[in-house]
Image 1 (cartoon, rainbow, N blue to C red):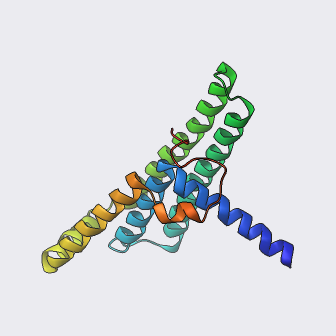
Image 2: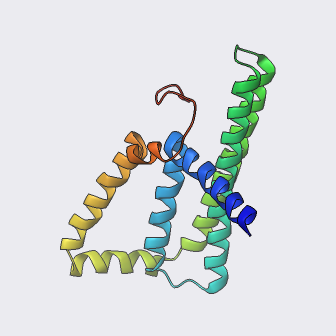
Length: 166
């Protein structure tokens, strides 16, 4: 049981590393929150929600795998190597393909005018919620571009904070 809990802790540490160090991971998380929040305005079935969840999980998992590959390549090839570049580029390409597929899924699921009308009605009837949405958007942008500074102390690495740049 103890080893199982340790493995969960290691996995969580890897996820936190990605959140703290990968801007694209933070973008994926913010988009996921927006998708789930706005999905409540659309008449979605359980199957459609399941497809959304699978799509989001696949994008996030691809980003985590991409980060692992990039970190491994950086350790294995500290100086420029064309094969290292190919490994990193193809891993990033996998994330791009997965994200593009998720956008396709979202277009198929959310292409319902009644959902957009529902969003419009909600903000017309509750104009103060526009302020809440604006504050959330500003916080989301700070999260994406500045990163969760406090979380960096949780994830212990041997790297200097600004050493990891894409």
